[in-house]
Length: 159
Image 1 (cartoon, rainbow, N blue to C red):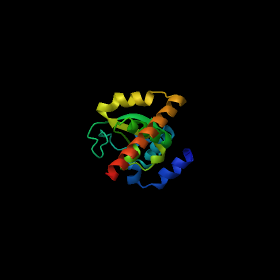
Image 2 (image 1 turned 90 degrees about the vertical axis):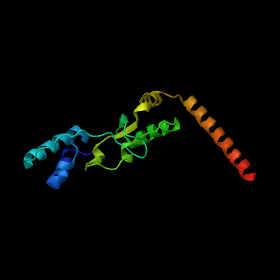
Image 3 (image 1 turned 135 degrees about the vertical axis):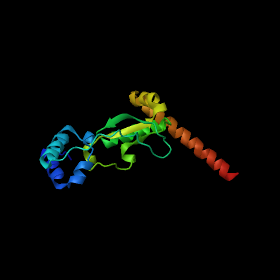
Image 4 (image 1 turned 120 degrees about the horizontal axis):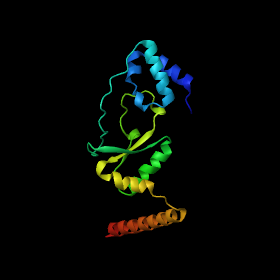
């Protein structure tokens, strides 16, 4: 679903002042920013003061998460997260974080974060183009490993 100017106008005009000011303008697409600014001006409201937003933290990732990519397609973001997890690189998506003051999350990109010490490795994994043959070989190798692990588990269980 694509939002247009009129959708943003309806949304922002329906919000009370507090809810309107709670929106993070920087997370809006340019069209939404324009409508947002106009609504603030019409109501005679000042935009909230810019605050230094701390890096997101969650579940043992520490205080040093770095955004390495932004996706307008949530499926692409999930694929990127899966690739990093396969490479054993800790990561999380902005959709994994609790919502923080944004009313119109649908207008924002899904962001991918990794701890700062994994940035180079993560970018290398995401930038690596993989051929269909290499992908098939990796899938086959993963299936063989999975079968071996299952066989080992069965052997341990039988003992």
